[in-house]
Image 1 (tube, rainbow, N blue to C red):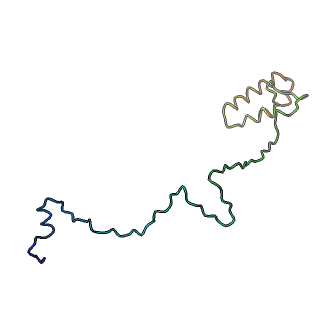
Image 2: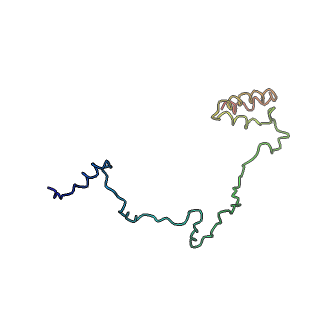
Image 3: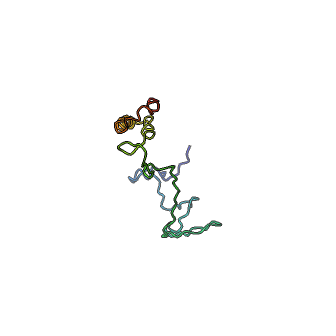
Length: 135
C-alpha cells in the first residue's frame, strides 16, 4: 500500500481540476547532454592544416591539366598508295579482307562489297589473290 495523507494524491487533484494526467515539469531542469556542443557555423570554421600539405583556399580554382599520350600504329589515310592497286574507297585488298572477321555484320557485308569493287577495278589480280580471298 500507499500511505495516504489528508490531502488527495497528485493524480486525484489533477483529475478533479480537469488538467492532463501528466505531471507538471516547469520547475525541473534538463540534464546537460553529453553529445556534440554547438560551435561556430560550418561555413566559418577554420580548416586544420595537415603536415606536409598546402591549405587550399575555398575560392581557389584548380587549373591543373592532366593529359595522356596517344600513339597510333599507322594511319591508313596518311599512307601514300601511288602505284598500289586499291578499291574505289582507297583500300588495298588486305585491308578489305581484314573486315571479314569483324564482329559487326554490316562491316562483314561491306567487306564483300569491297572485294567485289576491288576485283571489278582490277580483274587481272583475281588469279593471284584467290587464295587470300577464300581464306
